[in-house]
Image (cartoon, rainbow, N blue to C red; front, side, top):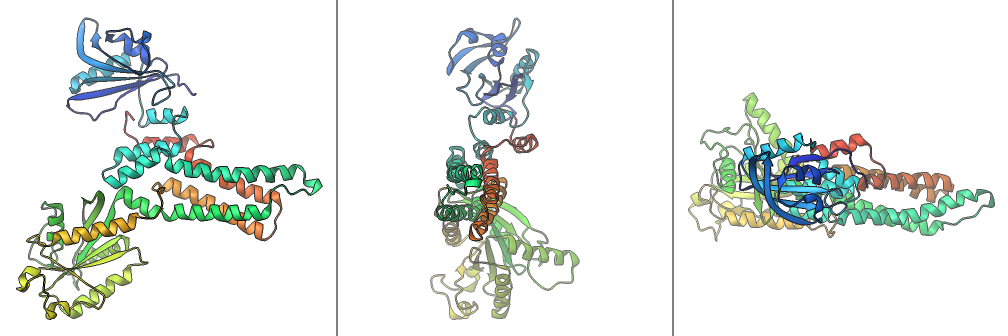
Length: 467
């Protein structure tokens, strides 16, 4: 256990007026400092994991009636003695209590310092600590589930299993080096090759899950594209249920990307309204159109809107071909939307040949009206199905953190060198070197090895103060 010499305090609930506000202290003097301003039971004589009612006072002045949660280390979030003071949510009360704690010897906590102490004291590993930050930032069901699984140690267990398998063989190879003169082989090379091959497959699976993890964490990017005045901004407003984008009959109104988020089926979708695709001499509009194609390349889903009445077959075919040339691989989806279908004068259940023949073979558009919000549920259902397919990678362990991804990639590269070494029968000392490197990179993920303080500072600085 690492006990910091100073006791830290911070407001752990959002600032501003509310029903309650919680102030947290952690450190060797947390109980004594809290007790010095608390009128009630003597906190220093109480057991841990208990709740106490009383008053916070400054001499004769009563600041507030509070509940104090008392946790004794190591059975606390940080592993140290910890106090949580639940006050009324007045900004004056909270600032006054914090002021008293500072006067009694506490220091203001830095961002993420409580969680950093939890990591340093072995209450959680580094991957779990980072998941705490992700859990706080989660704004969708998918992001919440991913962060919760990682905080509970799902990802950490996978990494620990990988390291355990490697450590067994590393010990045997290291033993061989001690008996180099006897030319003894303790580690069976065939078994080691099978193990390394399996580990490389497992790491590649985790690396491949990063795209899924990024979608779960940050949402699925969806680009709304089409020619001017086909209803792109109207569709964005309809999906958001607010007037986010300017709607006008003047062609080229949208000259830059407008982005907002909608949650469908517990998945966040980041819709991006783009400039209309057309030939233009307007320099600003040209830049907007260039950005449209950049967004197409970055998006997981492209919604191509057409004016089903006015757009010609040739125009539709050309734009679809242009979009498909930007979509790489089978993971990106193109959805064609035949907008303004209400102006066609036909029943949406029976599409006339003159309209259905405008689309290439294999393309089945969704007929809708963004203005009147007709058949939008068909679009949202399709998006939800795409999301489920995207997120169903067949594994309950998904990588969502770029630092983890880079470390896994480095570990995989080291194991690839082990594979090559086994194929070319290199000596055990070189094999051991690459295996140790792989273990090092895997250990960086969970903090099993010593992590540079600057790296830790960067990780925890992204947390909110009070966590």
